[in-house]
Each structure stands twice: as structure tokens, then as C-alpha cells.
Length: 244
Image: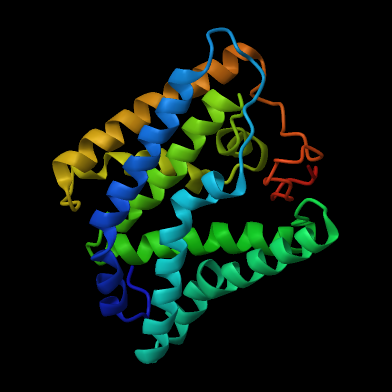
């Protein structure tokens, strides 16, 4: 299935995937260092700041802003619309909410944008994966998975939170299974930095399974984050009817 887009736009972005793979690997090492420093038997969730929470995905978001500009230059309205949300649109909304929250000395309130954010991220992810994979561009699909699963490993070991894995059982959005599945792309297709990417993907998959086992054994798989916690940046509404 080929969508009516300029493949050259996506091929240009694909060239950034080696840097992004290394970027995610750096934050995996950072997370593993935090996990290793945690005292044995410690159960209280560690706090997560805005910088360490969002920095791993920032280059990918900035790349979408580049994609938005390239799409406009290529007169590709379909791609421009796709890149708008995860590119300049997301940056604009996040910056506006952050500034407003700082001025009012209150936590960021995603609720007014929650439904748009949920659907926008889910649908655009699926469309992006179709475009990249059907055009033989495998680096960025791997980067998406590495970034997301790295975040899940961090949440599982430092906050005892299953997050996306739990939400699969709540809203049955099965495309989330691709997050883990695409970690194995380097074993089947040519991904940039292929041997390194294969090792990174395998390590992330093992850590993800171990993290899910840890959360299940703790009895917290179904437990949602506290929406009133000052460091909780995930207080948004998902596709299921029960809000956080």
C-alpha cells in the first residue's frame, strides 16, 4: 500500500536515524545507571523531571518539524499534515502549556488537549510506519520503537508502571504491539548501524520483558499513575472511557 506522499521527504529524514539510534542508546545507559544505583528493595517511585523525561525524544520531535518544512517545500500537503502534530504543533502546544503552568505555579494540564493528543499520536504513528516500511526505510521505525521501549523500561524499573502495556489491555489499540516488534527489524532488514541496532533492540526487548515481569509481580500492572503527583507528566485521557 503506497500513500500519496513524496518519498524523498522521508528518505531525507531517514538519514538522521544513525544519530537518533545512538541518542537513544545514550539514554538507555543513563537509565540503567539510575536503576543500578537504586538501593536493593527500594520500592518508592523515583521522581521524573521534564528534562530527563522528554529529552530522549526531543531530536525525533525536532526532526518532525524539519519534515514539516520539507513537505511544504515539496508541495506535499498529506505529509505536511502528518508532520504538523508531532512537529511544530506539538512543540507549540507543549511550550504554551509549560509557560502557562509556570506562570500559574501549577502542574501542566493536558486535559483540554488530551483527546486530540491521543488520537493524533496513535493514527499518525500508524500512517508513518506504513509510509516508512513500504518505502524500504527501516531506521526511523526502529528509532520510534527504541525510544518508546526505553521509556517503558525506565517506567517499569523506576516507577513500577506498565504504562503502554497496560493500556493495550484497556483500549485494545493493537498497533502498540509494534513498539516491541520493530525492535527486531535489524535482524531481518537493513537498518542503519545494523549490528549495533540489533544489539540495542535485543537488549531493550529483554529489559522490557524483565520490567513487565517486575510490574506484574508487584501487583501494580493495573495501577495507574497518580494524576496529582507533581512530577507526573502523563495525566492525560486515553481512548478508554475512564480518565486518569
